[in-house]
Length: 221
Image 1: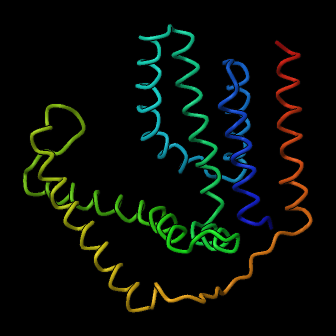
Image 2: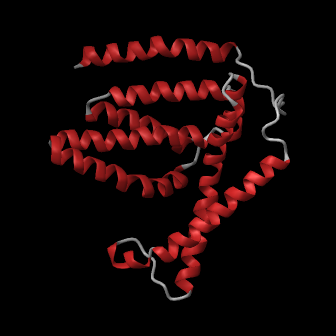
């Protein structure tokens, strides 16, 4: 089992490769590897649900780039954004936010910063469930809340309850943190995070591997 910091470093190496790739062929190859990885671990349905949210954003980004820099640049921009978000989807699919935050604290990151990062990631599915509950409740009252401009004037009926519930959750969390001595020093953790030999090999070997990949790409062009 790899340390969370090793997974984060490898994810950043992959993100650099995606950002530096400037060809549809290479981006398609990189996206294909990630999709195969998702299929092997039987997370395809989760990825498809996530894709419904990310794909419109990628297409919009591609259209804007197409309008300003041409069709080829727009296609590359859309696929690059989609692939870049996919690699972080894979990372968070196999990495618990709490373990990541605690391992970063072990690496001398201030605990409040690590806690905010972990809490933000953990609250995303919670807020998503609250949003669905608000939509269902408002629809049962006859308020048509659907995507699109036709129901845009009804959006306040969705946003206001969701914002109120979000602020209430934040207040409850702050009170719970204060009751548990959040600001007290000398915090300990249940799990011990330590980089092993394999972790150091992957982290240290990632940079030469990154440079070698770019060298191969340069030769193929």
